[in-house]
Amino acid sequence: MLRFDDRVAIITGAGHGLGRSHALLLAERGAKVVVNDLGGALDGTGASTGPAAEVAELITKNGGQAVASTDNVATPEGARAIVQTAVDAFGKVDIVVNNAGILRDKSLGKMSVEDFDGVLAVHVRGSFLVSHAAYPLMKAAGHGRIVNTSSPAGLFGNFGQANYSTAKMGLVGLTKTLAIEGARNGIKANAIAPIAWTRMTEALLPAEFEAKFTPERVSALVACLVHDSCEVSGEVFSVGGGRVARVFVAEGPGWKTDDLTPEAIAGNWDAIMAEQPYVLTAGDSMKAML
Ligand code: NAD
Image 1 (cartoon, rainbow, N blue to C red):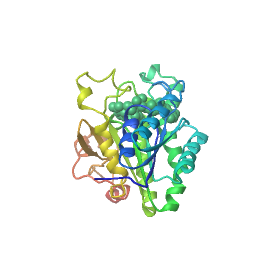
Image 2: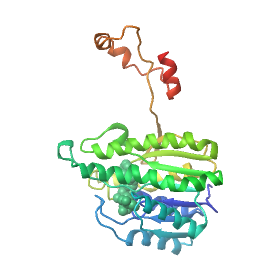
Image 3: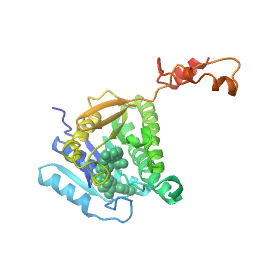
Image 4: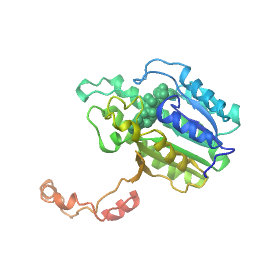
C-alpha cells in the first residue's frame, strides 16, 4: 500500500470536488494535509472559510492530521501564506497539488478581458505562485512532488473556454519545465487532465456520469504521482472513470526542402501533417531540422 506517513501535502482548492477527494485520500494514508480553499463561487467571486474548515475537520475526525487555509492562490501573499501554514503546522512541504480552479465560460466575442485574466490568475498564476513558494523548501530537502491540474479543454480545445483552455495548456508548459528544473533536486512534476463529477461539471455532464466519474477515481492517480516511489516526471495524464492514459506533445517527422515557399508548403500538406515517427523533445525537434 502506498502510504504518506511523515509527508506534508498542500492541496489547493480542497474544499470541494477533486481537491477534497485528494486531501481525504492522502490524509487517510498518513499525510499531514493543508486543506486550502478560498471558498468562493464557481466563477471565483466571493469567499468563505466554510469549505476548507469542513474538510480539515472531517480529516481530523477520521483520525488524520490537517489544517485549513483560506488564502488565495492567485496572489503572491496568499501563496506564501499557504506554504507558511504548512511550515507552521507541520514543519515542511513535500507535496503540492495545484488544483484550485474557476470557470468563466463565454465564446471569444463575449469574453471580457477580466474573464480571461481572472481565469489565468487562478489556474496558471496560482499554480506558479504556490509551486514557487514551496520550491525552495523542496530544493533544500532534495525531494518534492508537484501535480498541476490541466484539462482536456486545454489539451484539445473547447467551445466557450478560450480563457480556461489557455490556462490549462499553460500548465502543461509549467509542468514540463518544473520537471526539467527539478530533476537534479529530486523534485518531480506531472499534470493531470481529469474528468469527474463535481460542482464544476454537474451541469455539463450527462447525469449517468455521476456514478462512474467519481473524484476518487482521479485522486488515485494523484496519490500515485505524489508518492516517493513515483519515478515519472514531466508527463500529462488523462484520467477519469477508472481509465488513465498518457497524453503527450509530439512533433511529426515533418517535410523539408531548401526552397521553402508558401506554394511548396501548400503542396505538401500530407507530408507535413504526418504523425509517425514522432519526436518528443525540443532537442530532437531541432535535430530533425538540421
Ligand atoms: P470545484 O469547483 O469543485 O473545486 C475547485 C475549488 O477551487 C473550489 O473549492 C474553489 O473554492 C477553489 N478555488 C477557486 N479559486 C481559488 C483560489 N483563488 N484560491 C484557493 N482556492 C480556490 O471543481 P473541481 O471540478 O473539483 O475542479 C478542480 C480542478 O480540476 C480545477 O482546476 C478544474 O479546472 C480541474 N478540472 C476539473 C474537471 C472536472 O471534470 N471536474 C475537468 C478538467 C479539469
